[in-house]
Length: 459
Ligand code: SF4
Image (cartoon, rainbow, N blue to C red):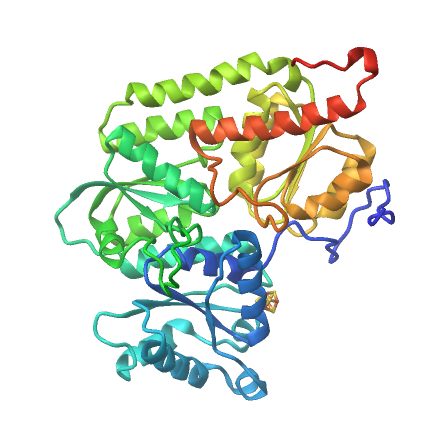
């Protein structure tokens, strides 16, 4: 009973978070930056921050994640980190030769007040950025927001610092990926190709963090959105942002800079959200939905209806990132389940609004996001109203073990299982995978606890 001190009495708390349901901003910025081809993320702060961010991503993706750091010591902490960053830019381009350095700030550099825009401008003026190479930046103070905010800030930085409007529109649609796995990004490209829609997906971590074993070490894997592609987003005819928290800021930045109109849809997780995505992409790209996509939908609907009896009325607690929780909660309702407790550590009013809309179908469900929406609160809610299933990242295993709840790993980070990098959760195929995972743990529980006369060989 590792969490035996969790009480069932819920008290209003201020200024205290216990086991946060989020992690730090630069992790998101680092992950997003890896979705640009030939990019080396750079952490403007102390070595400790960078080591933590790299190790979290490495543990989740089971791939070596490389990033540089400004290596603050006492001097930089007092006098500012400009000299460190300028020296770092020099060293990185001459030793590691990336196409792009994507700099993000940390708590320390933000507290000192380092201005990344001014420092990167100075690097350019001082001739430290070679011809044809780039340095982009994002402000990611971790004392506010979460890893999702950091991701959103870096993706918005890609749009505002790369997009160019030449005046000639291209027959292409920008897809801004909210925080999702490399497998999900690969799936979005497959679906778009199947539909005949020309897209520029950014960021794109497929073939970067799920790169195949070839026997040869490649410093910059072949995946990632390229600089010419990013520049061309300013000429696209439309932008679809997949997620109101992690993707919409980039769409807004593009609209502001290059007048590219946009629509924000939920991340396509589950049946209803995927339906909305497919229709939005069909409209934006001016293409019809092919029979092959309709057949994929039909397979998901078939499994959902065939297995409805096992899902019906089951109570669920879930936690994680807002853009994933919104469509996932809706999908659970579509399956006939009862979402009861939902927390996300990422602050923001959009989550609250969307969840209120979705949970109209689940009266009395608890949900909360922001500072005090932590794992402790989730555990307390579960103690007061037990659930049949817990869904969330690896940190949920403590609650699942203490309360003996079937547990499906979903979200970030997953440190103790594999599969998330390789099998998508988005689209109709992704929906099938989610159904399979949920059904698997529910049926395992039934098999282990059923009385002998109720123990069935066949489902
Ligand atoms: S919370 Fe701040 S100090 Fe801690 S690792 Fe993240 S950026 Fe560094």
